[in-house]
Length: 265
Image 1: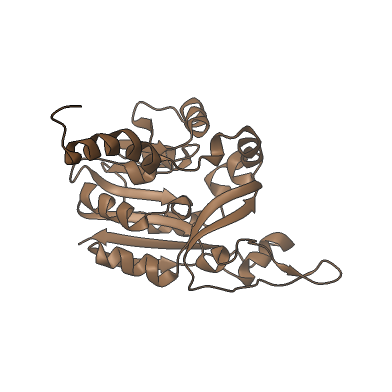
Image 2 (image 1 turned 90 degrees about the vertical axis):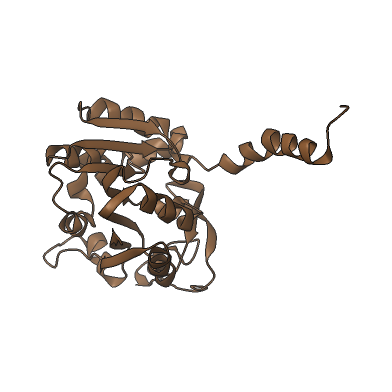
């Protein structure tokens, strides 16, 4: 150890031990029980049309012809396939789950789509590489939203579009993420508490111990603004008025999703 200074020893220690802890992120979608339960959801079986938010999300997409598209948290690749079908020049989908990517490669294969395993926070693309960056219901699993916004801004071309959906902050406020029921089991109301207390929520969704991150609407919007985005549109999708499904009708009693479309300033 002769000749090693305290500073050099500290650097060695940080390289050996700090990095692994920095990249550890929950990956529920690779757990067999969770992945099987997710695969039984309507949106997993029927694709984009089965998502309550899809109509609003699609309306916020720019013309994708000849665009370079990045999908953060691409899952089964539905959005990647849609972009490719609508004329995108290149499409890259990233996801932390190898099981999700394997399904995406098997069911949405196209020469114009690339799938890569990567955590959203760890993206490292060159400046101005993409014209459109999308993310569907993935960013509420991400702890460092500000970091993601900075990286997306960096890899977007001037006037590029950043469009994402997340679970609505009203939905993520409480870890239970469930209705308050009456004595007969009827849904009385959706409880909200500790709305301003942002941070980790340990929830039970499909299986136990699913980590999500609660943020206020103001935090989503102001983080984008501070990252030099211009907010173009904010939507809180609701079900069609002509639906007869009581479970779907109840979605209009509180917004389950938040959509934001922003442009690189």
